[in-house]
Image 1 (cartoon, rainbow, N blue to C red):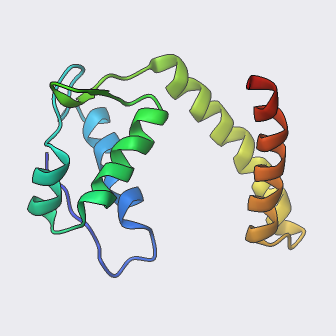
Image 2 (cartoon, rainbow, N blue to C red; image 1 turned 90 degrees about the vertical axis):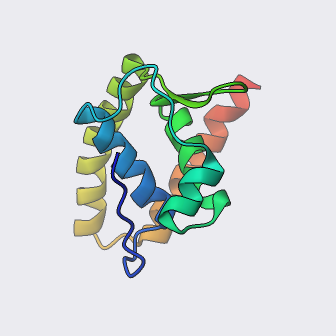
Length: 126
């Protein structure tokens, strides 16, 4: 798996890493059950902080692309239901955000609104 980080990009490093790992899964460069490099090894290999790699792995786990195993580390484990749900959410958000941008709603206002709604529903799960 080849990872290329653009240190001049405005996109956060952990997101660049996340995206490249997802692309590697899609391209079958990484397969179900395959181990990813350890956080330390990958950080050293591509020249970024270990916490950045750890954050990318955590996001990938939350999104259903990886599972974290105490013995094996990060393992490709694609939860297709979660991936489908995330893709459907992305499609829905695409239109909602396009409408918001047309109405000049600021990015910060969108983030705040999403956080408020998420917190409201998240309180039911506790």
